[in-house]
Structures are given as C-alpha cells and as structure tokens.
Image (cartoon, rainbow, N blue to C red; front, top):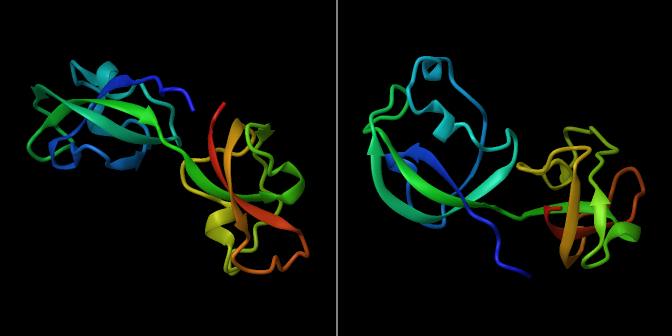
Length: 148
C-alpha cells in the first residue's frame, strides 16, 4: 500500500496522541465565531481518521478543555462485512448497506463507523468469513476498507 496522504487539522489537546483514531463529526455551534475554525473543519464528516504526528502549535478552543493542538492525520481503514462476491483485494467497491436489522449480531460490522454508504472504497485485505451467519441468508466476508 502506498503512503497515505496527510492533512493538518486541529484536535482537542486531550485526544492529541499518535495513533488515536476518530470519526470527524462536524462543526459544533461554539465553533461559529472561532478565528481558526477552518483549520479544525477541513475533514470529511463521517470519515475515520488516525493521528500520525503531533505538532507543537496550540490554540485556545471554546469546545475542547485545555484547547486544541495541530496534528497530522490520515484517513484510517475500517473493517466491514460485504458481499463475498465483492471481497477481492485491491478492488474498488461502492459501499452499500442492504440490511437495517438493529438486533443482528453483525449489525456494527455491516454499518461500520467511518464508512459512508454510497461512497467508494478499496478492499485492502480480506480478513475471513463473517463471524456470524447472516440472518438474511447473505454470504459475507470481513474485509478491510480504505477510501478510494
């Protein structure tokens, strides 16, 4: 896999640790008047990111206790269940959820955090079969996905 492209953003000082993964949830109401809000809100809402470098730049922040630090992030991969026919390493897929059965044991893997329905992803690894039998009778594989 090629080196992932990094992006500089701001994150609460408490969370600014190398290796921390997070889902960018968007702008809070308190951000409206912040002079550096563009530096915080330069990520894609709903995507998963991993902090790779902590920078020394620090800003006061109305949202985060102890302010915010500049960090470099990359988009993080996510594990998900997809149709076995689509589970081919290096293939590009459009992620679609075909079941909304909330009490299913595999619900979280079929609706993984950081994976947005309708977006394109690359299957980077096939990890194996689904941990449980699909209640809808689908043949599923557990894969690692990254944004295309």
